[in-house]
Image 1 (spheres, rainbow, N blue to C red):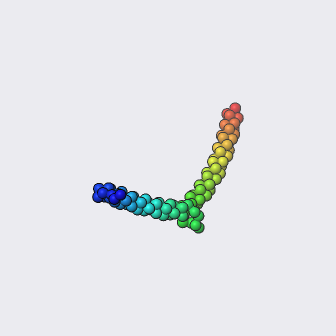
Image 2: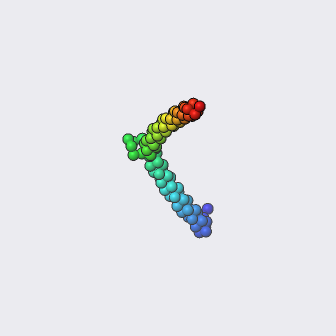
Image 3: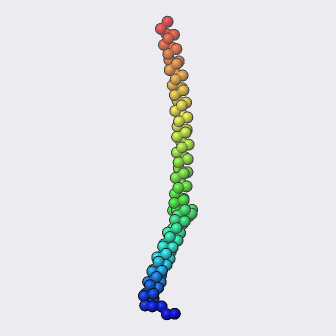
Length: 99
């Protein structure tokens, strides 16, 4: 059986649209692959310039700052304790000197 002109036209249109869609799909796949390759490269350490290295440095700095804050907080508590003790001694001295 031979296809009529109308059927042949429909088949040609379907084949053409399929080819265009396949081209778009291949282009999207290629772009996605290369985009994720760039992201993957940023997440691998490479001696300083990758996102992974920058985050690691920031975490280390945060730990350092946190330990300094903890030390400062402990020193503040000790100083407050000493001031409270000195205040009690002063009050005791004042109360004894007024008698």
